[in-house]
Image (cartoon, rainbow, N blue to C red; front, side, top):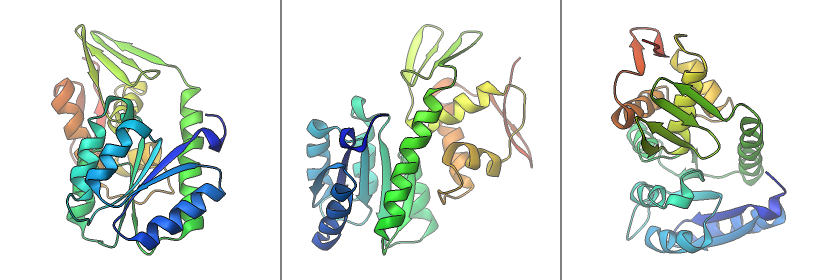
Amino acid sequence: MGNKQEHKVLVVDDEEAILELLKYNLEKQGYTVKTAPDGVKGVEIAKKFLPDVVLLDIMMPKQDGVETCRQLREIPEMANAFIIFLTARSEEYSEVAAFDVGADDYITKPIKPRALMSRISAYFRRDVQKKSVTDQISIGELLIDRSSYTINLKGKEITLPKKEFELLYFLAQNPNKVFGRDELLQNIWGSDVYVLARTVDVHIRKVREKIGEEFITTVKGVGYKFSLN
């Protein structure tokens, strides 16, 4: 995916000290960085800047991070951007809400800059690795195209957020094989990302809402599989 100079990062947080800390560390790593003090301004900047990564606080004035994330995911050019929540809150419900609107990761404060830089690098590395696999899977009237992160179902094109797409693509690559939640978390989110097992359920539900119930089957007490009927 090229060098870091090509990667753009947007940091959205109402704490000026955090904006300065992250901007300094990101620029030192070679990223192009913009900052915003609230969600409304963050969305406004994102529409023009089109960042590859957004570091997003949850608790902010004017507009919280969850609503901001939802609006960012509605920007077509940002369907494949990485959105990482930064928050002092550790309640489970806010984590589920974050993934429900399309977040990729969730990091609690206080932020350790070195660990965060490592996390961002890992995302880009995984992205490069995933681009080297087969670009298309065709099953019946369903065509899954990794190069554009789109799905064509019965002639209708559907765009999925990055993690929903990767989950569907992974299951479709292994039809009729059952995967447990932990296995899916490992393969889609990676071992260095700390997310709840129920995040998988949220993403499966959202994929089914878009492509129908028949493709992904729940195997009670075990996990999920892509069904070839």
